[in-house]
Image (cartoon, rainbow, N blue to C red; front, top):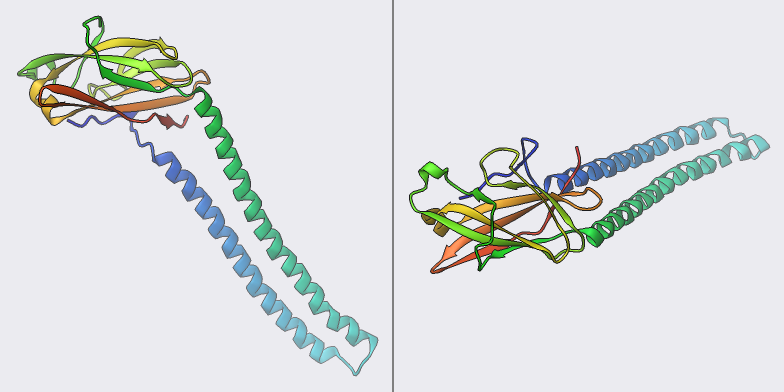
Length: 237
């Protein structure tokens, strides 16, 4: 069963922010390309007008004709400077964006938690959630115990568990430091577990960067396997 995870009532899409950033950059690049193309066409048109004027005003080899003849070269230098300046701006813009994003990624990675979820051997969990169908609809109820361990670089202040019960998730307030773990249990339907269940944990790090980490749980033969997804960063609204 696939659970739709929502953030503030909106469908969570970890690729959305990246696509939006790329879209903005593409628009800027296309604008600059259009600007260069229009500038080039205008330069050709103005140069043609200047040459026509030169042909009309030039008289033999006078000082005036020399001055007028040099005008086109000056104008060409100005247009060339505009084009080269625009290209230099594009290069600097991309360089700044690259290093800014790279620095942000390094800063986040230095304190980013990672909540690894595995099956728990003991039954020490005192907190649980219903996963999949509602309690009344579960034909073969099964209590699955899991261990949540922080194997990242900084503490995780958990906020909610996304089980599909509602849009915002179910309250799950715990601070899990690096190397620390807590136990939970899920009430599931055995048949659904064989097909596969999905859940997520939403949390923040020490710099209040917010993440959603998703997990897949499935029963294969006599054992239950849990696959942990990578933390997905949530852009602040």
